Amino acid sequence: MNEILQKTERTRLRRAHKRGAFDRQTVNAILDAQPLCHIAYVIEGSPIAMPSVQWREGNHVYWHASSAGRGIRAVSEQDVCLTVSILDGMVLARSAMHHSVNYRSAMIFGRPRVIEDADVKKEKLGNLIDVLYPGRNAILRPMTDQELKATAVVSMPIEEASAKIRSGGPVDDEEDYRLAIWAGVLPVTTSVGAPVSDPRNTDGVSPPDHAIHFKLG
Amino acid sequence: MNEILQKTERTRLRRAHKRGAFDRQTVNAILDAQPLCHIAYVIEGSPIAMPSVQWREGNHVYWHASSAGRGIRAVSEQDVCLTVSILDGMVLARSAMHHSVNYRSAMIFGRPRVIEDADVKKEKLGNLIDVLYPGRNAILRPMTDQELKATAVVSMPIEEASAKIRSGGPVDDEEDYRLAIWAGVLPVTTSVGAPVSDPRNTDGVSPPDHAIHFKLG
Image 1 (cartoon, chains in turn cyan, yellow):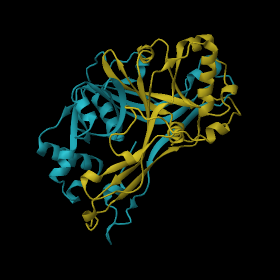
Image 2 (cartoon, chains in turn brown, green):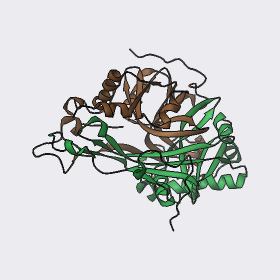
Image 3 (cartoon, chains in turn green, blue):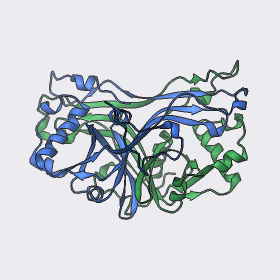
Image 4 (cartoon, rainbow over the protein chains, first blue to last red):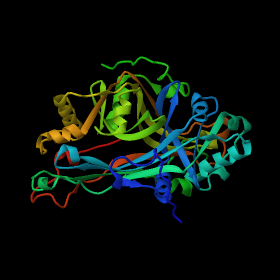
């Protein structure tokens, strides 16, 4: 069942309303398509857009960071904004102003929660691996307590969230369509190449399905 | 001539120092490879990571927005952080903790300046087109005063800036290399497809070189 997310002052769109989407399925699909995200927060008085890797479990989004870092202290004490944006195309129009890009973007606002329980943290880090590479966590060398201590895991509910999507061709002023100017779209896609094996892999080891079938975008 | 950018409290790296780069050429190359950026600023008390399209001219980075928007007022009154991140690969290691991603990321801190002069603004918006699509601005229907008024252009010096790059294969704990676990890299690339012409193009118009040869990543 899809669910409509409640609009707030932070998520309602001021511009380009028709590009907005406020349902959970649309937001989830964008998060699931691209692990690279940018998290905005204020650190020592300055806003920062920090790239990170996010993963989703149900109605929560997760990321991790060094336990010793300034970032993890900062995000546990303030609301943040996590954005995932995927560029899908360059849109070339007949006037400069109608040039655009096709994209899918999801934005989640909220107060992150640092996961303190060691067992839950271990489970979540295993999920990070398995969300990206199904079945991989079970075949890895197990995490040590030391590694677990060094890593902080953060979760945020996907509640105050919205998506914005532009797709399709250029939309020009009606009188400009008669001009002999090429207009159109340059499609942009994210491709994953064939797995490149580490030269130090042991003999006879070959790429598993989760490496061969990994997809992005 | 390459130039080393001065480190500040905001740009010096706390972690993974060997991945840091503080020279202008490295920062510029990342900005030039990917127009999609995220700009962090505080709006009505909340940090936001806003996706946008940036372009570079010399030692400045530019972006544009609606003149009427809240964002443009906000960024002219505070320091912001503009980040461009490019995902280059997924790195699969023999333990969960050594999984990583290959990436190139550039971060610029500073106080944006809104360009007020109409002629300069017009020139800059023309440059946005030509930086992405060399020679295109001259063939477009000229900008109207109305369009110019509706658009705000913002510039920021590329001074307080840094880059962070990870490349190469997994780096595992020495004792884990004997394990029969596949490790390696899944290369991620951004591809631009063949131009898709707008069905409303006039007869005989074909994609120009700037559309055919457009590259990203």
